Amino acid sequence: MLEVKIKTNKRTKVGKQQVNYLRKNGLIPAILYGHGEETINISIPEKEFCHLLQKEKGENIIIGIELPGDKIKKTIIKEIQRNPVTSRILHVDFQHLIMTEKVHMQVPIILTGTPEGIKSGGVLEHLLRKINVRCLPKDIPPHIEVEVSELKLGDSVHISDLSVENVEILEEPTETITTILIPKIVKEEVKEEVVEEVKEEEEKKEPEVAEEKEK
Image (cartoon, rainbow, N blue to C red; front, top):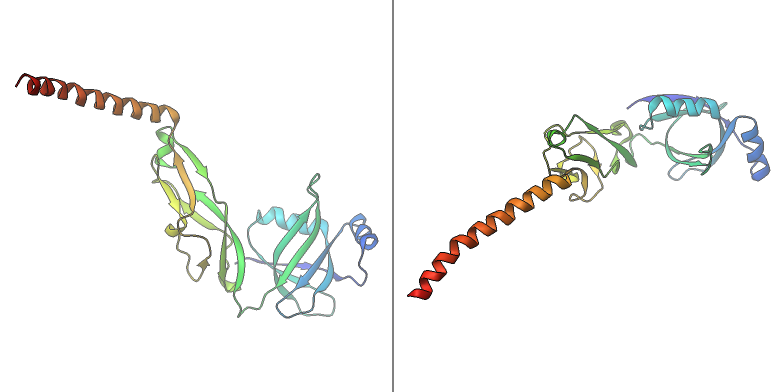
């Protein structure tokens, strides 16, 4: 799994006024916490952090938090709060990783390939874009790839079809990740074929019924 570093500073003051001051000066208020550890209030450079997110395209990464006079702490992003209007980052939660302890994560699902069903007019529907997993920090996948090239009309991929080494998937096995929707035109053609088949069967039975009556 990819690891990056970012320099941070401890925050000795909290409150709305201090938070506004940080944001005006290009810093993002954040916290660093861990299992059984004291929560640390920190600030991170907004420009550097946003660049990091854009570069890694939202995939899971281990971030080394550099605090003055302290050892680098390996962390993961647990939550990012954004302004609902501007999408500007307002706050970040970092979780300190203990490399021997399993962690609960959300991992992006990426579809690869062009399905066979697309060539027949089908539509690829990506229903599940992230899944919950549990694993050791060293085994956290940046994403999980799902190959969809062989999917035909009506085919689907479910959680039960996934297998990731050293990773426990926490979703229901029957949950659908992606499916190839059958286009309306094809559905109507199938219905018409079924109707025609039923008519033919009925027409075959009519002479038989008439013969039985004559007897």
